[in-house]
Image 1 (cartoon, rainbow, N blue to C red):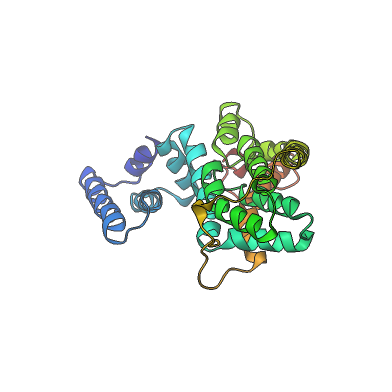
Image 2: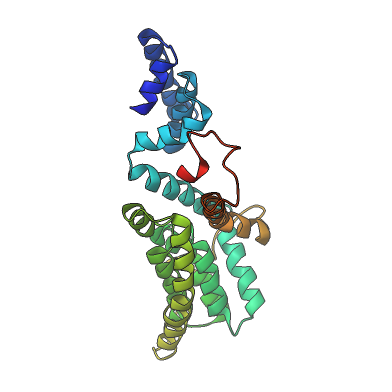
Length: 282
C-alpha cells in the first residue's frame, strides 16, 4: 500500500503503472520458466526492479518489500529463506563432508563423535533439521563404517546437535517467529541462544548421547546404504570457505544488532542516513 502511494506520488500515470505491472509479470514468468530461477529469488528480484521502475527510492526498498510479505511473514520468510540457501550451497558442494572430515581429523579417531557433533552444530546453523540430517546421514554411515564403531555412537551426537540448533537458534523458523511475535531483536535472541545452546548441546546433545550409545548393544551400519560412501564428485571446497559460508549469517545478524545499538545509544550519528528512515528503525 505504501509502495503504491509512493509510486503515485512520483507522478506515474495509471497506464504507466499497468505497463510496469505487465512487464514485471512477463519477466517473472521468464525467470521461472525459461531461466529456471527459483520462484523465491525471482519474486524478490522482480519486486525490487518493479519498485525502482515505479519511482520508489532506494531507502524505501526494504520497508516496501517487507510490507508486501506481511508484517510477520516478511521478517520470517526472508531470513529463513536465505539461511536455507546457504545451507543448501554447503550441502550440494560437498562442504558437509569437508566439515566432518576436517573436524574429525582435528579431534582424532578416539574423539570422532565430538568432532562429528561439532560439524553438525555448525552445519545445522543455517539449514533445517530434516534437510541437515538427510545430508549428513550418508557421512555418518561412512564414518561409522570406516572407524568400525556403533552407528549410535556417531548418529546420536549428530542428532543432538541438530536438535539444539533447530530449537534455539535463528534463522530456524521457531526462534525467528518467536522473536517477531515478541518484538525482540534477532541479534539479541541469537546471542542469548548461543549462551544457552552451547552448554545444552555439550551436556545433553553430546555427553548424554555418547553415554547412551556406550551402554547400548553394538548397532552396525545398516545395509540400506550399501558399502558406498557419500557421493561427492569434483573438487571439494576448502574448509575455510565452508566455515565462512556457515558463519556468514551469524556475523551479519550481529553486525546489524551492533550498529543499531550504537546508533540508538548515540555513539554513531544518524546523519549519514535519510532522516525519515534511520537505520535503527529498519
